[in-house]
Image 1 (cartoon, one colour):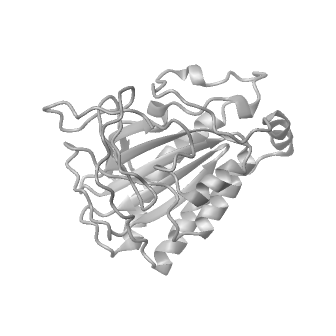
Image 2: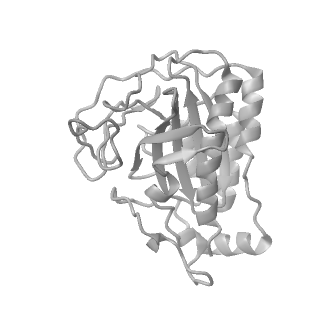
Length: 284
């Protein structure tokens, strides 16, 4: 996991350089982290939030999951399968975010698709996302995880699927809030084989009542409440080339109601981040 420091005094909203984000699920050891610094002692563990068993919300989340799932042409599939290494171990990542465009591969590059780095942290998660309706989502923090299968950020079923895949390049996470302080978690998993992304999105969407990606507790100074363990939550998935984008949404008061409205709040943010990831993945 990346390392962490306390939020600097007087900071109302910590940026990527200073924030504490304990990942929070039944399979997660609550901990705080910050890019480029040492891990702080673990905080008390919270049970995972309760999934809203609401048919309308579930169907909406399932539909959202396939919003931008990209089909690959035969040449893309053959190229990537031939280039993917035999090992399925996730690639190790540094905790320093890459803000430049050096992560992109020029058009016509001979670098195999599976060998491309993932999208830069700041490129995937901008400071603000504005929707056409006027809604504004503000980034509370973001981080690069050391690998895709750390048990304190990913559930056992997803770990198993990743280990059975052709490998994962890395994982990025971010926490956003809207004007009403509703909480939205985003995670981007970049796989080596785009077909593995299709498999992950499909399986996780079908098992809509299973949480395999950890939600993040808000850091001090963010203006967000730490929600109780029985808070309602919705989740949705998209696939963009090699990348799976996961979105989680919770009401500011953690209420277990109005799930369709919560899905509607999550959708613009998930769509925006998914679009940025898709733009990067489409570069050749």
